Image 1 (cartoon, one colour):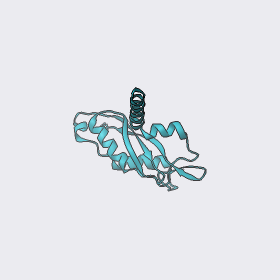
Image 2 (image 1 turned 90 degrees about the vertical axis):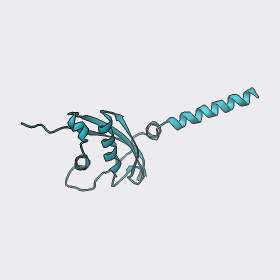
Image 3 (image 1 turned 180 degrees about the horizontal axis):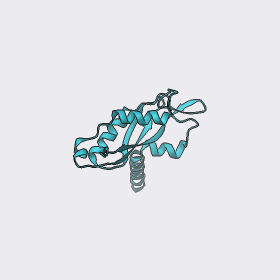
Image 4 (image 1 turned 120 degrees about the vertical axis):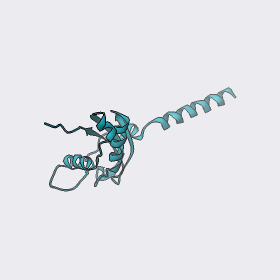
Length: 140
């Protein structure tokens, strides 16, 4: 009877540990780096990173509460890129302040990649971290 209780307790602890893991963390430790990284925009005019940063800049709305308090900073958002290029599991890994964090998450949730990460010609999911900067314009 005691052995059965101990086995059940160990199973419960194992399941709760696994459920507490973020799939990004699990994925990185198991699969590593893909051969080809995801492509945000397949345009040939700018670099892919420039296109992503431009998308963020066009969609960001500086929270008025942060503007009024003259708060600036960089929020880092980590998320999962699925095999179809969609994103999920967004979370702030470097916070500045709640209003800025929420806006960074809102914009990160809008991001969709045109092409997912690839390994051996097969689409694969991967984690991605994007820094979103909040900078007030300087008057001269």
